[in-house]
Length: 304
Length: 307
Image 1 (cartoon, helix red, strand yellow):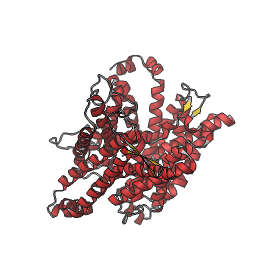
Image 2 (cartoon, one colour; image 1 turned 90 degrees about the horizontal axis):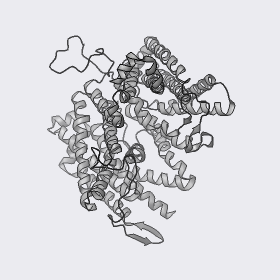
Image 3 (tube, chains in turn orange, red; image 1 turned 120 degrees about the vertical axis):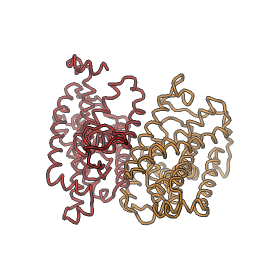
Image 4 (spheres, one colour; image 1 turned 180 degrees about the vertical axis):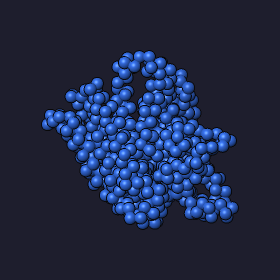
């Protein structure tokens, strides 16, 4: 049981890291960025391709992947979101255009084979791969009868540090104040001289970098990297997390991530693996019906 | 281009070679109509894949266990989907916009992962064999019901019911202050949509020998949404055109086949940015108008506000 709880913490960390980026974009731009899960997948895929295909050591590869994912966030902003904002389109249109980008990202990886146009990025088509075993040091510790893998410790530490850093940036710095102002009222923020477009672009950059990082940590811990990890593993669970925590709330997303990890593990222990997958969505459904502002969210703002 | 050459020079051969494609187009068009109904009433509900699953499983289970005639099974499947939609709709339809979309996705996945994969009678993750399927005969009811459904829904949008939906879509508050029972009309749209989706699910089982639970998840949902959005949701022709266009596209341009999702994604983005009202929509079939060209006859294009 204690071992299971430990697993809940690790998987919860990845959910939290993923959901923070998700919820940040929703809170600031009022847009549900459904390409976030594709960026998550690309974080893992890019790291894998650098490590396994190009022989780069893990750490630099991870850093490059996170930066590339951040740049993909800018791509999302410039291609899928900014043109719509210029036209004052309702947020639902942005939802659909980000679905378009997600389709493209996934299909590119899924169709990549040796010798094809994207063969330098990915060679395994729709198959699932794992990091070569010697590329990542993974010491295992035994503590109080529990088995703790080094990679999972890294995940936990990374998540906690990043969430704290992000939280204090949002709370205490000038940029964070700008961010909160834009989230609160876009027009007023413009009038006060905040460059709203720049805030949006940096939000997307940070959000996608976090998403990519979550992806590569997922690939590291679960040893499962495929074009579908974003779509199948975290896209909808991420939604469940940010709904649990209250949409747009960063601390809510963190708590929601760990909560979902815990719920899943408990369901797994109690009912077995078949139920586990459905639990997230049952929780999502229930929370939306009973308490749409989320467990920790403030008032529900009406959005369409 | 062979596609069009054959279509005009050898229609019989064309039909024989592509019956399954036609059936798939028909099913997708019916599903797009189902999504259109809720869109028309101003709601972005993404639950249709779930109702489709209800229709499909009911139909096949009744056929396999009770050996009842197929039309009855499809009918029961569609009605059951409608009944479930009432139960789902009661709590969920209070939500709006993105929240409604998320809740309905939650329903679809909870149904698929929580129920279908766990109840022994649905074959759990293994899916269901459907030995009585008739891929070639199954096309006939699809091809017949598509125009009928399209006509019925088109008529429906002209009635008081349709006007109420329009009113709700344009401004819910104004609609309700004009005496329109908003929750009721939203529920009607939701149930009609679910019945159509369940019907499509039942029809589809008749062209496949196998019911695959992975068919009824988020991927399908997004596909249906794509059809409706690309086609346009201002009138019922839009989703049909979208479904026909996007389902047939990989067939028309063979080179695209493996990259069909890339093409779909690009089309989706281009449409939503440059032609938010869809291929069919206000402004007629006009293509993208360059910015420097004066809009002569298009009176201030306005996308449907639900979109």
